[in-house]
Length: 136
Image (cartoon, rainbow, N blue to C red):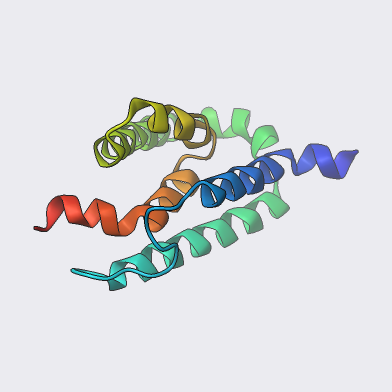
């Protein structure tokens, strides 16, 4: 039971990734063509690196248990605000890319819980269509 309790969020993240990949159909998952195509590989590398570091951190100390101690520091609150300002801007980009509030609402719970782990997944999966908005 302790294993499940300790790894609940990682299980939730794995389920989220599986659903996101299962419902992705309009763009190849790992391949990009057109301008800046190599950026898709960079996005996947960033996601995998950050995910690996996050998993490593979670094996060292419980995020939930360390949160009260972290929040004692004023810079931790500033970094949290900074993070969620970036998260809101990323949500806006997702909305513009998808053209659908429903799709954004489907991604929103994962983005609010996992922040950049969810955002990097979205960028890696949708890199070509995001770039197409900026390059004609």
